[in-house]
Image 1 (cartoon, rainbow, N blue to C red):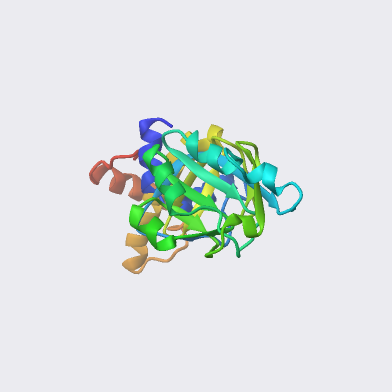
Image 2 (image 1 turned 45 degrees about the vertical axis):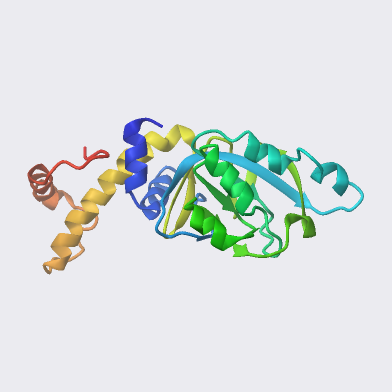
Length: 238
């Protein structure tokens, strides 16, 4: 991400990002059913994926001992990585706890997204690391899962996620942006929110939504005058 793209994606709402992706034909980008552990913290970074598979007792020892896939995902994390965990939407076994979350943070990671559960939610919240999860559960992953592989395409909360996709989150939830689209989506999201800011002012004063939201040709000049007169905003008013 360029500095401009990063500034824009830190500023705009996830709802706006999802709308811009829909306009580009990407209709399944929002991770359904996940809640932010810290609604006050924004999430932005590159997807680093971890895939869990169902527990099978005869192979479990080989997949969970030592440097397993979960530990590799954490120990090899890079700056700005977001750990995206495919936990098969299972709510009753933790997929990550506070010590691994702390290690991810110390390695420069940006956050955690899991369609399963987390453990030690209070301690993770205290770290300030953005985290999105379906549930919290005290049991470790071994109750239901085995960690299988790192940085392969996964399904998380019904969304197909490829390593190095851009993950963005706010108080309303999180979404995944294909890396190749991130710059254009970011700029157009800023533009959309600028137009919506103008529309909100007009509607608050009594204007109809018709021709105001979205802006119709007959009111475009009013918007452009309003834009020219307002202070420049960091992150990409065009």
